[in-house]
Image (cartoon, rainbow, N blue to C red; front, side, top):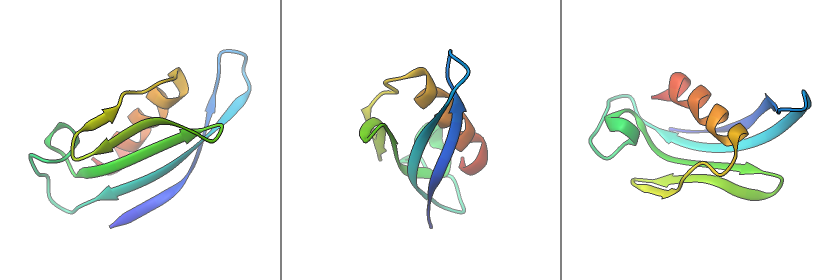
Length: 79
């Protein structure tokens, strides 16, 4: 199943930054997913640039603190 949306993350200055996400996740965990969980594909964009990408393997590590926070939220939600 595909899910997408936006997450508002508060930055160091106390302002909200928008992180867009696209996530492909399954009902059952697999060795091909993030941390052997349920997410097989996940892309995060911030300010129209890709700040994280996982497509059955890590392609782009989190590039910003906000991307790390959004990743943690999505891992809790879908993994």
